[in-house]
Length: 142
Image 1 (cartoon, one colour):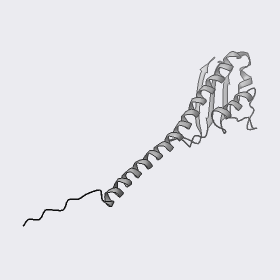
Image 2 (spheres, one colour):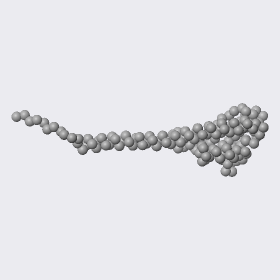
Image 3 (spheres, one colour):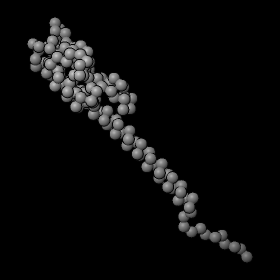
Image 4 (cartoon, one colour):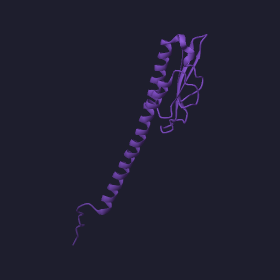
């Protein structure tokens, strides 16, 4: 008499546990990716706002060429006493509101060549590959 092998019915507990483990690893991977994406999105927004603010100050200086020296700080200032912000108080406040709370601005103008360099510096360590002294700087002849 030949005996028929017993047929397996249903899903075993080990198979269910393996499936749940694979699903959990996938969900954790997606959650980690989401966290990194959020950090880098914030970093990207700060860089974009820094570029917008640099070009904004450059346009302000171009519109007021006769008073170029009033914008010349030659050092990074934050409007809180670490240098003479000249007539840039509103711009420096805008940096803190749009780029980062620790953002600083700098303007270096050479009056005889009518060349200005405008920069923004902030701590961008939260982003992937970010720097504690990240900066955007543009130099232009007025």
